[in-house]
Structures are given as C-alpha cells and as structure tokens.
Image 1: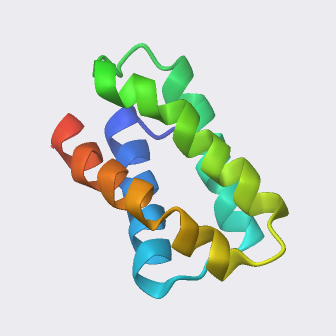
Image 2 (image 1 turned 180 degrees about the horizontal axis):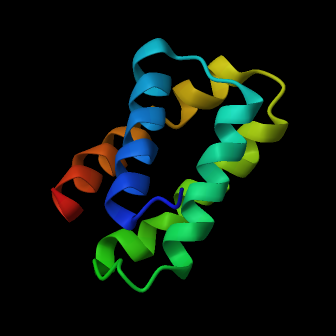
Length: 94
C-alpha cells in the first residue's frame, strides 16, 4: 500500500513528535524519516514552499541521527528545529 503525501506527513509528524516528547529514538526511526522525506521531496503533491525548503533539513536530521553516538543528545540539540517543523507540518495538509 502506497501512502499519499497527507499520510506521509502525518507519519513524519508522529515520528518527530515522539522523539521530541520522549527525547529518544531508534536507528530505524531515523531511516524511516529519511525515506519519508525522500518520497515527499519527489512527490508533486507537496506544493508548500516552506515545507519543501525544510524537508532537506529534516532529511539531514534523520541522516545525522542514523549515525549519532548519543541519540538523546542529537534530539536535544535539534529540539528547537523539531518544534518548528512540527508547528508547520500539520498546517500543510490538514
């Protein structure tokens, strides 16, 4: 089953929210974030200019999390960015 852009954004938002709230994540979550962002960047259904601008930042967050030695510190360091992304993601397709 293929997820549409709305479903992908909801899943991305859920992953980021859980990491921000729990201040923990797993390698597979970061890999999922990267896959979601790659798909969203290639999807013509995403026409939000701000979102298209921050998707590479979110991808980079996923890439760095995948190789981070301390995942809690990685999330803490990016907490402000995560919160900014989360404020915008739901408004894009809800």
